[in-house]
Length: 300
Length: 300
View (spheres, rainbow over the protein chains, first blue to last red):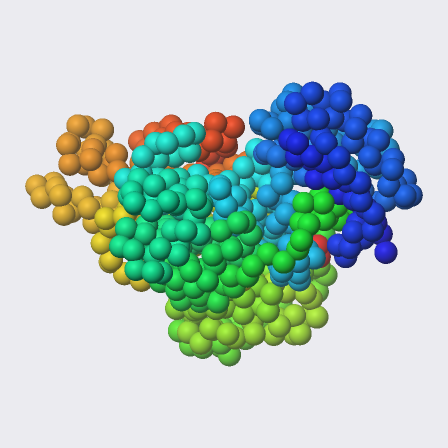
């Protein structure tokens, strides 16, 4: 069986793993990424970690998951906020040339989605859409075994889908963007504004309050359910996946919103589309595994 | 160069063409499709037309474009309203077995999009989204040389994307669905309701009136521009295509709305996504050419 190296490169830490083509981690190294110190230091460190992997020379390809949108054709980040100096830096080319092994990059959500599509919850399905809901909302379209990253690496930037035409402009996203209406952060923001007498620490508190009959919490949760259902319906009308694979911290409260989201979703799509599955992500380490799946998806 | 047979099967007419892998029509037959008379008659007729094509036995694959969503894996229509008796009929299998040539099907919008992606306006681009705006609104996602048809053949059913949360329920589509807000039909409906003293025959009249300063027409057109921009932004956040390829009758009036749609679109997407091209479809016969491209896209 062929093996690959997957690299999960974050702003703070980096993890390098040797992974089999069926997604098993065979060896692993980790350490700080030195993300604030610029590409020279970051790249030197990655190369050293790769060299610590037993028989690293034998892998059929290298994949790198990075924290931001990528020009996947040219192997560069389009925008890098968590890794200083990496916007436009020829990341894939440098690793390809150093090791003479084909190297590919994509953003962390796309890579996690690819892992789930190829060796996780969506294994064997032609089209899946990965959606992660936590402090933010992210996504990834995987079709015919490949991430559809798009021209600018913004395919899957579903955070910016407008679900509320009366939404406020809060940040760089559109007014009424789903991340500002239905992410964990949004739920806490709304609850803190509406519910004055109870301390709200995270979205789970708001789901609990709603179940206990708190009127304000229930209003917030009902709106979140509609907004998420609308987001899923938009994705479905564009790409009609076999499965939505769901990750992110909000899935801890899934019993308190997901069945209602699915019910509402079915009202918002054409009848035959009601068969789309909503399934929880199942991999423990989608970051490195998905990165290793990048060369697999490119036929290496 | 390999050749293929493309079949554009409509409710009224059918066209069968031999097409080269670069999209040139080499021979063509056409006739009535007998769409109301049931599969036996329709299939017999198609087989006869194929046999009239010179050296039809030598083609590397056959593709059929049909008027409705398809289970492309099993080669069957999921819903057929214009071809009587074709819901679930094993269309591709019957042709495959008759001629011993691999046969694939997909819906007409997906097939037209595939033609434009492979040998038309989007040639050479990894991801394009085809959008047709006429009496209705349809779409097709083509990624890495293949149509993403989806589980139920509903990828590209962008007609049902909700752009107006105050929209009426008019038909099987969602209230506020973009087809009911911004298609040619929608524009005429809105204009007839608002503009009593001037005869409105088609959307072009409304665009003309708006340019001439008619207040009601201008309100309608401004809203259509926003709704279409919103629809394009939704598609872009899900799939980030290099290019939107635009077809359909409303493109006759493109100078009167498309530049404004693009301008508004740029406000609704992340800054790097402003580079997405909006280009008019360029093929004269995307139906048969796109059908012939189906086997090409499957590696035949």
